[in-house]
Length: 262
Length: 270
Ligand SMILES: Nc1ncnc2c1ncn2[C@@H]1O[C@H](COP(=O)(O)OP(=O)(O)OP(=O)(O)O)[C@@H](O)[C@H]1O
Ligand SMILES: [Mg+2]
Image (cartoon, rainbow over all chains, first blue to last red; front, side, top):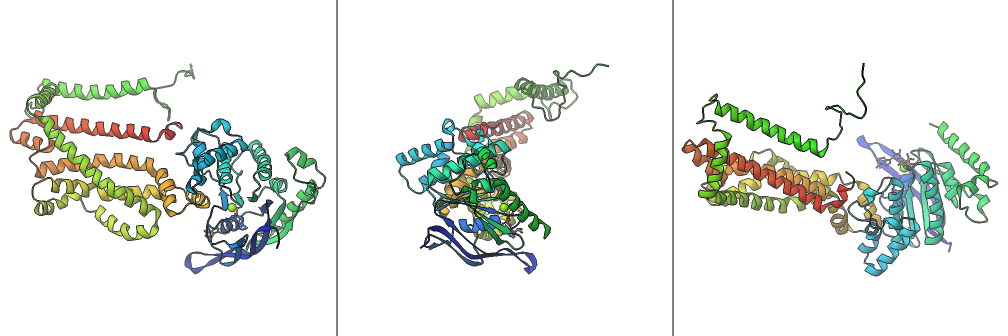
């Protein structure tokens, strides 16, 4: 038995379009996610990253292949795979605390435990001062942190994130990326993060799954070798690490190649 | 040439909010103007006082109607009809509209039915309603109900459809089942829109009330106005109109207050 929590085995997705036409967005994609590891899905726009993530979440049904979590085939959405979207998903009618408690509440976690866990994860994402604020009083980055805390507090085996920081300014983005490294260590959760930002991918990933476009296929699996001593905790450190620049160039080359096909 | 100072905004500024003071003064001004024109026209003899009595006389009549003639009873009956019919229409429309906006299978069943009824003017049912229900309260309540229910269902459904897909998907990936998704995410997300839609539809209920009372009633504000017409009492008719307007305004304010009270998190933004 491997230590992987999630297996994708030749997963495909063909969308039926109007007038009987079809579009194969994802073609026989296979990869694994090791326990507590961060996998980044990287690739040019339209290569099927979101579609792969949505199939893992159970929000979209594959037209071929199989996805298994542990030993169980994925057949629909469930609390073991929490998802954070690029668009804000805060429940505006609930305070930050109640937003974070939401998942636990509907899953029957007792009130006292709920409260404690919510406070723990709100502290982890640095929002303790805003426990009783409503989402409309928060900035975009803060709302995204609420969404992350809400998902983590629900105790998923896997955290799925689709360009979670895409709408944020550069500085907030770095903060959030560094936060995700902390969170991964402390919450002991595996993560799959979709991005098309190369630097973000290298910083966060234990493994990068690079997809090529039309149809979406795994072009290459890249493991940032220079991280073998453990994850890097800050962006400054990352850019100075030997091997970083080389890897960035390599991925840029892959991106270029993909761009030329179009 | 002097340039307009940046600190002194002109009267007309594109989308620039007005102060509270200016809002109140403007509101008073337009009404003063209205009553002023009315007063001058009637007092100067420009119009037949039998057809357009002066505002002073109308207010005196309104006062007398309340004090001596038991007008409050008519008003009570009218308000009761509106509230009861509207409550029944809402009790059906809100759950059905939310279900139709959430589940396309339910929309597929009811939407063709509801849209067809929406295009039938409710007053066209008055003759048949009178034959079915006689002259009691039932035909009036039925008219008010029919007049708003199909619009309210459609509005609630449309608003429910605008609940963002990501909110629903977030709930699903947090482990929500269908019931939790509808009750704990979709419903609270559209509730502010539903209350606003109800506020708009309540105004429509008042319209149908007056029609019902004018056509087929011996009680209520509309019936009072029809009685007054028979005796050429234009002042009483105008009293009725003013009272209906005031009641409409009052209900509108109540709904707005309820909206603020129910959804405090929306106020923070504004
Ligand atoms: N529901 C759908 N129906 C039809 N086609 C779809 C649907 N969802 C996605 N597609 C198509 O599948 C392909 C992959 O889309 P997807 O959103 O997964 O790409 P992506 O890699 O996430 O792109 P981006 O980086 O721009 O977000 C695209 O060509 C898209 O048009
Ligand atoms: Mg995408």
